[in-house]
Length: 81
Length: 329
Image (cartoon, rainbow over all chains, first blue to last red; front, side, top):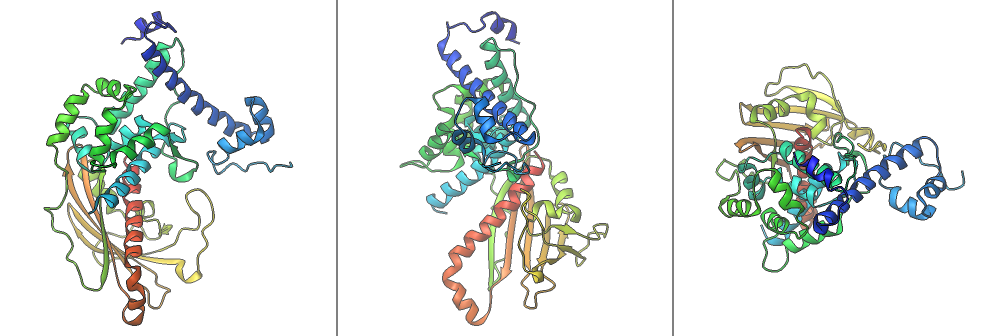
């Protein structure tokens, strides 16, 4: 396929339109991985505060973004635990 | 059907299918590529046009994945998206559209546009990022070819097939859906009593599933005790026991089941009928649900609520239709 050619122009900026769209896909990948890691963190018993610290955001931001999205089977820690 | 209702139903069914597709990728935000996948399995002319071009759900999913992976490679990143799993939408929460996908659907029902799935598809192929154009390219077609096909496509409606006769005193609702599997597979699924809890949300378990499926055979079961997301269902004791009767079975394309409450004295059983028809790339399925209206003063009281009832019937039909569609994806 075209991958050898594309790899050769890795991270090149000669086609910004394609590059920008690719960055959008990268964000989707980052979102997918973020949710997976947050779920894994909660399963391992990490608190929202610890997750937020690791992500570099506030606890409120981490909770707002993920509390509804996570697997409902995970019992999430309460604030004061 | 008026435009408002059609636009609402179209957006509801596309949202569900797109978010289901997003859910199997571990995402909670559905974007335009998931909307594209939802259109591939849509029951209206838009889905028909896509499938006539030889696009099915598997090839479309592959094209979307390849496109995303190729974009990562183009950034010089050696990574790929996590392997897709099964659809977990009904067991999870927190789903939404991306901004551009939501705007696109809203635009398709704006002034002068029809608001059906074809209008959504027209907006989608014209979306400015070029993502959909690239995906179509991977599927060996172009926006122009698709639009041209769409202009000629007629909705694979089953209008020619006889509708269950309207019976006075019964509330009836009908919905059509597309299932991406051959007719005989869908038939085997819908005629198997053991599979009923998968598509009938009010049935949790069913006993004696080994009984031969003959008209008049009755199965006993129970209402579900938990919702798909694991929360317990609160239910009055008399509604706990369920009975299921096979009313009619006409190989290869018509079957009717009836669902009742044996412990409720004036119990009203609900009749669910399926009609199957071959369609390009799968099966077009019509589902009808009906029950008898209350007689006497109760009927009079219920009369002003008929539009609400109609909507509720549509909701349950929609649930059944989407559960069947999900099984074959």
